[in-house]
Image (tube, rainbow, N blue to C red; front, side, top):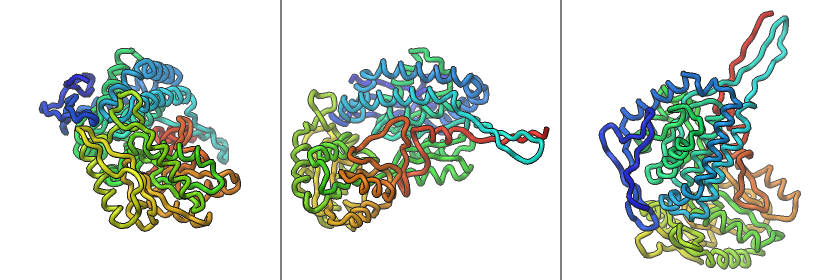
Length: 480
């Protein structure tokens, strides 16, 4: 990619920050600076919120015929599909993931827009039987101005995951991409404008800059009616604290320490491929990564061998290179953090059987890593490294596997591998997490709830449940 001087979209125009400050964006596969972006100021945030409030209160969008809103979202979906390959090139170059992964994720984002387009005219209230000659009913009305703080690991897909239901409900959107990976979201909004999809001005704005500055300002602002964050637990706590100032509703999708629980009757060949996909795609930088492998002692050696053989066949390299299966990590400083955590974990116990090192060169590459003999009290069992590191632990009894799987502060996605359906359903019931996948990992759809328990988050992304966050209930009582 050539070096670009990118602008943000605030208050109806593509522009720089009010003080002219910028920050650099790199390609993590080469360490080259590929763009600059505006470093928004507090003044820029105020203008952005005021514009979003004006767009909401004009009612051009919030009171638009819901079916027409759905048609707008459908046009947005089609424009996203049409630009998917171009957006995937930008995503791969900015994030480090493979082109194949980026393309799949962006098409998933388009699918999400399609799904919520179909729900926009199905947001319904209810009539309620009450005593006496009265009519009592509820309205579900748009929440208002929503702030979307987007992570760097799936920059466009996770932006669209929350933008789609917000728009379907009639809200206005302020999206703040991660400072490391803003380029695909900016390019997407340009594509929507060029396609003339029918969004009124300022219904969607994208503001760029420091999360600790403008992200906190958005979260704690009285002009924001709802905040959505995907990120780490410390950031989630900061956002929650800021939002509490005005009792602003929040949805938090935070960390994870998912376990794939493999029993002795599982299809090991198939499980090994899915285990690798669940921890090494996107270089392990996923909240729902299956970073723990809990395996029955009788099949431990065979499964570890199958996993190591599978991942050893994956080519690691620049995401735009032919045949690459695992790209770089998102930034040199993040790779350093993952390697430091790995070193700390190994000092407590466990045996490194594959990988464990940085890959020489300018990019932020790291070897796929497998550690066996990791115990529940170890750092590698408990901490979310957010990198390509698989920690393996054995069990002998079902009850032991369940106890170990639940022995974490996180509760996002866990996988169960068995041909015993009674065992599978029992584990689905008893695992302390928001999502369970049986004989497949990881998997989700726009129509299924993406939700975490414990420190993995608050609220629901995707599915009809997500629309509840973007609407509020009003009860109306009529004396007849």
